[in-house]
Amino acid sequence: MTTTVSTAAANAGRASLFRIANGRNMFATFALVTTLFLLWGFCNGLIDILNKHFQSTLHINKYQSGFVQTANYMAYFLMAIPAGFLARRFGYKGGIIIGLGLIAAGAVWFIPATQIGAYWTLLTGLFIIAAGMTCLETIANPYTILLGAPESGATRINIAQTFNGVGWILGPVVGGYFVFGDVNGANPNAGLYVPYLGIAVVVSILIAVFSFSYVPDLHAEEEVKEEAQGKARKALWRRSHFTLGVLAQFLYVAAQSGIFGFFINYVLENVHGVAPLVASKWLGLFGFGLFMVGRMCGSAVVSVMKPNQTLAVYAAIDTVLCLVAMVGGTVGFGALLGSFFFMSIMYPTIFALAIRGLGEHTKFGSSLIVMSIVGGAIAPPLMGHIADIASMRVGFLVPFACFILIAIYGALWPRLEAADAQVRQTDGA
Image 1: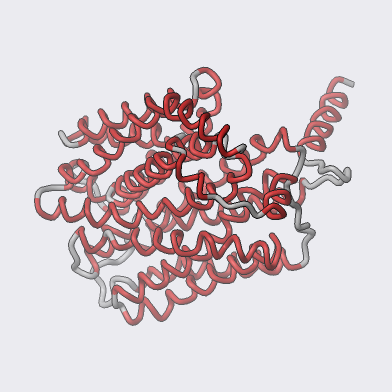
Image 2 (image 1 turned 180 degrees about the vertical axis):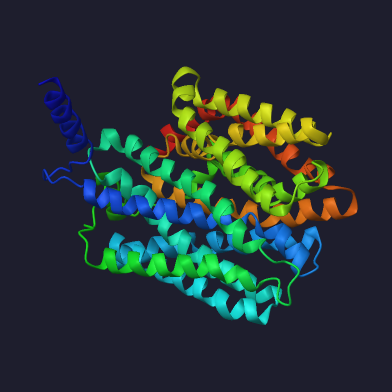
C-alpha cells in the first residue's frame, strides 16, 4: 500500500514538472532533448585531450595547439546570433535538426582529415562541429525551461545540465583510448576519426528520431512581447552590472578553456611516470567529475550565500589554487583538480547576475553573453605561448589574472546593480 502511494506521488510530481499550460505532459520531449546535453558535453570533453595529442603527432608547440580551443570557441562566437535566427525561422525542432546536421558533417569530415593529416583540416572539423553545438546550446537551454511550468524551469535545466556533465566526463575517458592509441605509427592521427565516426552515427540516429518526434515550438510570454515591441536597446550598454558581466564571462571562459585544454600538459610535466592516456582518464574522471559535483552542489551553496558572494569567494579560491598550481608537483596537481570544483558555478552565476533586471532587453543581453565566450578562443594560445617560453606552470598566470578580475566583479556587483537601478528607472525598463 505504501509503495503504491509513493509511486503514485512520484508520477504525479513528474507530471507536474513537465506539464505545460494546455495540460500535455512533455516528459518524453524533455528526455529526448536531454540527450543533446549529453552529446555536446561529450564533444567538448573530447576536444580537451587534443592539445597534447597534436603536439606529439603534428610536432607543434603549445601556442599552436591552443588553436584547438580557438577553432571551437570562435565557432560559438560566430554562430550565436545566427543560431537564434535559425530557431525563429525553422522553430526549435528545425533548429535542432540543423545543429545535429552540422555536427554529423564535421564528424564525418574527420575521416578524410585524418588521412590528409594537415592541422588546418583537423581544425576545420572541430569548427564545423562547434557550429552545430552552438545551435544546440542556443536552442536546447531555453527550450528545457519551457517544457513545463515556468516556476520549475530552473529545476528542468539543472537536470539537463547534469547529463551535460556526464558527457564531459565520458569525452576524455572514451576518446583517450583512440586518440592516444598509437601515436608512433605511420599515421599517428589514424585512430582519431574513430570516436568522431561514432558521434556521426549517434547523431544520424538522433536526426531520425527528432524528425518523427513531437517537439512543439513553444514560446515564453515575455519573448513574444519583446519581439512585438521591438524597442531600441542602446540603454543596455549604460548598465555597468551587465557590461562588466559580459567581460567577466569572457574572462571565465578564457580561464576555463586554458585549464581544460592544457590539463594533460600540466600533468605530464609535473607528475612523473604518467602516460597521456592515463592523464586523459584523470581529466575525465577526476577533473570533470569534480566539475559536475560542483555544479550539483552549486544550487545548495547559492541558497545559503548570495550569488555574487558565492562568485567572489569561488573566484578568490581559484585565484589561490592557480598560484599553488604554479608551484608544481603533487601539491600543484591537487590544486589544479580543486580549481575544477570551484569553476563549476561561475558560468551560470555570472550569466544570472549579468542579466538581472534587464527586463525586455533580457533576450538580446543573453545573446551577447553567449558571444562573450570567445574568450575561450583567445586565452589558450596566449597560455601556450607563455608555456613555450617558460613552463606550463607559469602559463597558469593567465587563469590566475582572470579569476582575480572575476572575484572583483562578484564583490562589486551590489554597488553596480544599485547604480544601474537609476538607469532602469530612467529607461522605464
